[in-house]
Image 1 (cartoon, helix red, strand yellow):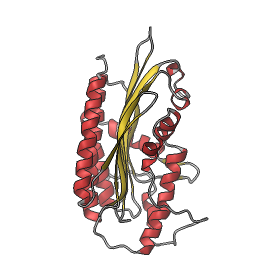
Image 2 (cartoon, rainbow, N blue to C red; image 1 turned 120 degrees about the horizontal axis):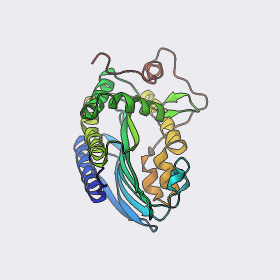
Image 3 (cartoon, rainbow, N blue to C red; image 1 turned 90 degrees about the horizontal axis):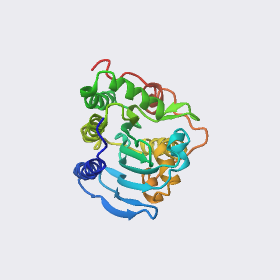
Image 4 (tube, rainbow, N blue to C red; image 1 turned 120 degrees about the vertical axis):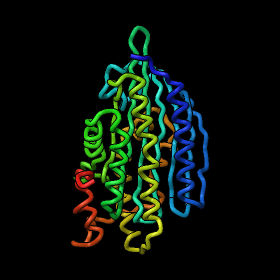
Amino acid sequence: MSAPNVDAVKAYLLDLQDRICHALEQLDGEQTFVEDAWERPQGGGGRTRVISDGAVFEKGGVNFSHVHGDSLPASATAHRPELAGRSFIAMGVSLVMHPKNPYVPTSHANVRFFYAEKEGAEPVWWFGGGFDLTPYYGNPDDCRHWHQTAKQACDPFGEEVYPRFKQWCDDYFYLKHRDEPRGVGGLFFDDLNELGFEQSFAFMRSVGDAYVPAYAPIVERRKDMAFGERQRDFQLHRRGRYVEFNLVFDRGTLFGLQSGGRTESILMSLPPEVRWSYDWHPEAGSEEAQLYDIYLKPQNWLEDA
């Protein structure tokens, strides 16, 4: 098994951040990303890039981070006790885009690499990541395109890969206290090293490179649709679910906060405006109810593709 090339992973991630930011700026057509470079006192740093008040994106962030240290936080060792006492390197690109138009879904993507070592022991490493789509008003064409692009990213690595990581995504992005999925899913994988470094790295690149082709056509189709206060109100209500997941369940958020990461960068994924209404339910048979009745039910979106 080939040894991990940490420098090659970092170079790819920096380039991926550049390419995704450029593509999203082209989609927005009005605003550009503002970069905030930062250093972590315990070791490492990153580039936080944020776009705000654009023609298409109300808020979005594309983050690169590369942190390292002598010991791991509790969130990393709780399920992997063999990591205790190891020094570590963690790097990745993570992004969330919150559109203005409620007919444009929110999207999230993340690709990351983890490496831990200690004297006298084999290094431990893996890749993780994926992307998922969170519509407010679902559209079957969007869901099929999103999942078809996800499948195409997986296909070169085996026909069993997409179903496995699609199911993992459905299971992971699930709000247990609400008993509902966060959205219509996509891909999620973690602890990936069984393919060896070269193939595992190639798979991570395939997923990272697939995000823009998966998301951009959906944005183009929906960004100019007319909407009113009712749609905006529903968007803000559903954004509350997004906040709940990120603060209660998301592994990346927990790892970042517990490892002394930069709070502003970690919480850049949160939407600028959000609403919680007590015991709110959509009107039966309404356009809003369709999200719950059809789209927030994990399914095979490619059955008719």
